[in-house]
Length: 443
Length: 99
Image (cartoon, rainbow over all chains, first blue to last red; front, side):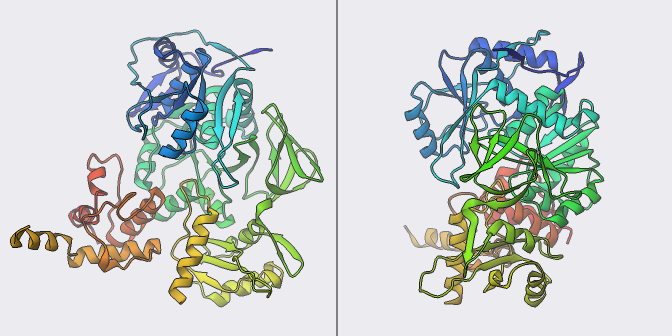
């Protein structure tokens, strides 16, 4: 059992964060962690609700020093918080004021003071459970996924190495994703802590905000975002700030969006593949290759149940995706197992079909749906597409070139937008709702 | 409720021509089933009321930017107020529109 430093790769006097456009130095961050650690109530579990990314990180680290486990729910609905307080009766909430717990639950209110500094970096046992993330529910009930400090720290360092971020020394990182989610935690908090980077404390929302905040960060600077934000950013902003590094995850990125982003930002765009259960698994640069390469310390193997990942978490995790292995460290992703479709004996996955739909020039967004029908006839797929200016015939002709005729959509429905959730995912419920609404319109 | 007060309430809930245009833009950009003319201009846009979420708001912001040339900002102190209702959003747009 070894200890791993809380942060590493920082230069003396370097900025750890940018908060309200001002740098917070590493010494100030470490002083704040020690100050808060002294103040936290004596409990085992803390629900870290801090919406300021820097204060969240101080809270995470202060809890580590006190051997408290950070609970990171995917949302703060009353229902989920109630479930958590039943499951973890001694849990309290840590809030920086922006998000209030929707239930009467003991809450520690935290505001950073910046009054203390510390130069010594604490070391934490790699076996200590640091966080429990919860799966977001598209694959069932929320399930706890505990992660040790060792798993988190190694994952942050592995991402830093695999994405070549060392080339952008002291890069400042702006995220549009919440730090309570697996991707946000890894790419905007842990990679910063382990890679000697600097985090933007906020989470700008509108394209104008993102551009203004990026412009205010020193270079090199990177943007950690999702396909949803990237699309809106490219569509709205006429002048984009220069960035050195782009990172995207949570949902597949269309090939033309990836090309447009790289061209207009003049920066490489990397994609991360992972899941809450196993953490981040692999990365790729989609303009160069469709093949995913695993992060250092992560390997895959397949058996009759599917593909297993052995990585930074302690146990092996069975992936809910269709994966075509190309060795232990490279693979192609063909979508979720739950997305498998079988039409007249021919098998494919919705994600695979979606990939082809979204690769058509002029298609902004699109998704195939398997309608719930059982009248004895062969059920055909429905496709929803956002493609202003494209004719249905053009899309069908392009699809015919790409997919088996059995999977051609009947019907192909044009919509203004797909009901994606905050992380860019299209839930089964939202899709069914769209199907029902369209059926009502037709009827 | 006496009669003048009731009239006041009714006229508050009626859409102006500008508000109707904005309502139509929101309905079409979000593919809502609601009829634009039926939207209560005083109801909250977020959550309850119109039931929009943050991704919807992002789409609305994009549509507003294209149609009116108004780029919405959330570090604007008034942001919460702007998204209070269709009416407050429309007021903000009319004050800042360049198209």
